[in-house]
Image 1: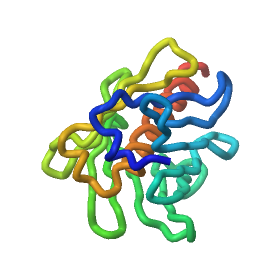
Image 2: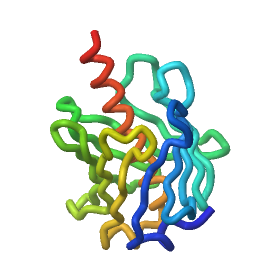
Image 3: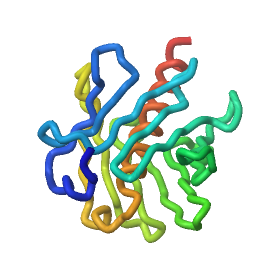
Length: 172
């Protein structure tokens, strides 16, 4: 698995491993940097693998819109808390770093921003493709982020969870 910072500046694509799979990989020209697998009944939990390690995400309880991030030992390292409007949220690590997550009105793209508002990365959905889910652009500020792999995976998973929730609300 490649370090995502080494692939910055190349075309990065989140792909579903098979048409109806809940497993995804982020790669550039076949070089995989991040994998994520949605787990659990609702698919809101996930296991993430990067060159830097393995993490899991899960909501703190069934009806929560927040998302907890744990390292391989099970220790909580971060929490994502959506804002009421649900087009934004705050990702706060237990070490003190925080990042702002935003999305467009229709959830077609998402950005992760530094506290100062500089974009770290942008994810743009690919519609109507069933396999190529999204394209990722690592912004100049993102190449300096030591947690770029997990930040990219979390930005993608939060966008996917938001889209899944919107589809469920629209269907009934």
